[in-house]
Image 1 (cartoon, rainbow, N blue to C red):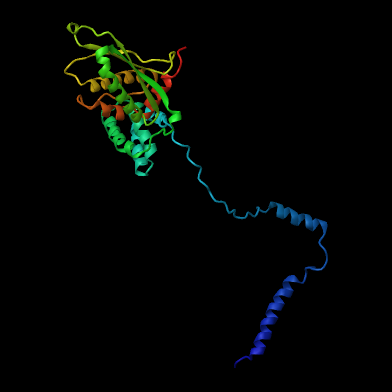
Image 2 (image 1 turned 90 degrees about the horizontal axis):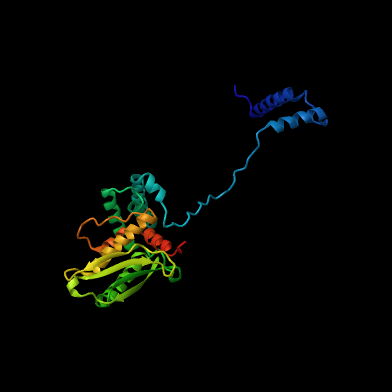
Length: 284
């Protein structure tokens, strides 16, 4: 037998109402709560964990400081193998300036290692031409002077050679240095006494500035003057940076290596900067 729908509705309402009445018949919803009850409710609320709302905060990465010429020097001294991996990683990520700095530290600050030095030289040769000069402001260049002393006849052909080398030095230093030339000419020695002597050294621009050691060599008829001058200037710079700044300038990889290549690759930008900065200090 089917139960009529109105009866079903009444039965449902009766069940719900009966359950509600049975559960709430002993509660007084109209009388105000006592002070004791209010204190208990407050204590429960105090012990409840605070409700936090999600914050709409945008995380902005901190900008990296601009690279410095001496970056990664500590890393090169501690673990040049790890620094080599870092240099390769940064180059892969497109951080070419930082990668070049790391490769340069392999050259001038790490313990000598023929394989890693060769790898670093190739990387520098690859990266340097693609990057702008480190210093593009002529007002911030550091002035130094290449000095030479020789006989009058040799001085006439030596001066334009040194002026050309000075321009190349400025480019090799990535705009860090401005190089002047000063040639002192003395009386020619008789040819019977052998080839002409040439004395070379580098100093700061002022009379009381520091100076490198003086290196003297001869220029015979079978020598290329420009290459001979470059080779000896590299020796002067190598000796000075090793002694004063603890920076390494690697020897030529091959005996017949072009000294212009050595100058561009073997002397790092930090090396050029240290050369200029130290020579510009007054003698104490």
